[in-house]
Image 1 (cartoon, rainbow, N blue to C red):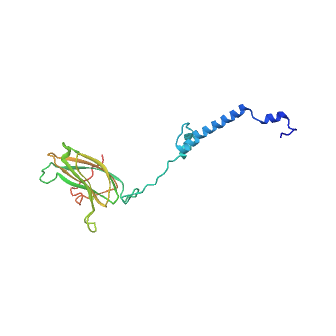
Image 2 (image 1 turned 180 degrees about the vertical axis):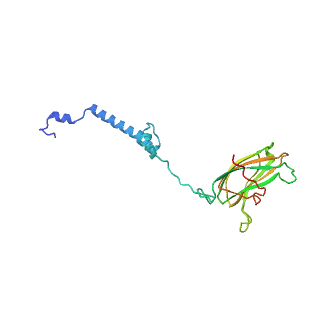
Image 3 (image 1 turned 30 degrees about the vertical axis):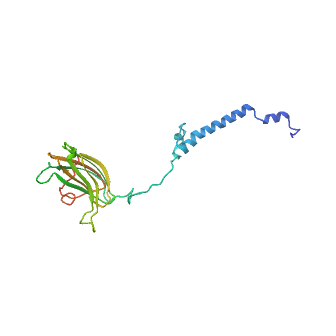
Length: 218
């Protein structure tokens, strides 16, 4: 029951008009749209149609669902410190023609790596007419003089070809590298580029009996 002492015009003034209600509703909807497109989408879904997420920094709040992966691969940590410093070298490995009396058409060249050490390589044969005439054996093993018991051997790739690129994570500590054999009727040269945490095998020792040295830096 309305208060008889309340003037009739006061009751009418307290109720907003239809126009005012529509304006208020439209304003609320506009604010909701701006909040959704300017804040919620950039922060929660990495969608920024208005560009406000980048301008306000809200885009940095978004992050995808994280899935934890194993930090070990075959017993070797994915991230590790290395005892040897990172280095890069280029080697020129000469191979005589097939049938050379001193058998200089074949040699073995290796570098020293610890277990889990990383080696990146790229090599290409120069002067080779037929790619299949160069045979290579990419492998590694522990050093007999240092091994306690049997020597551990890893066979990585045996094939023929004029070039190869790749990487190696050493499964065992020791010497790792290539045996090259030129089966063509002309001398060739293998240009080998290495990068990683390896050490050179001194000339005359197992793995570098031919005494291959890095090419001078040009």
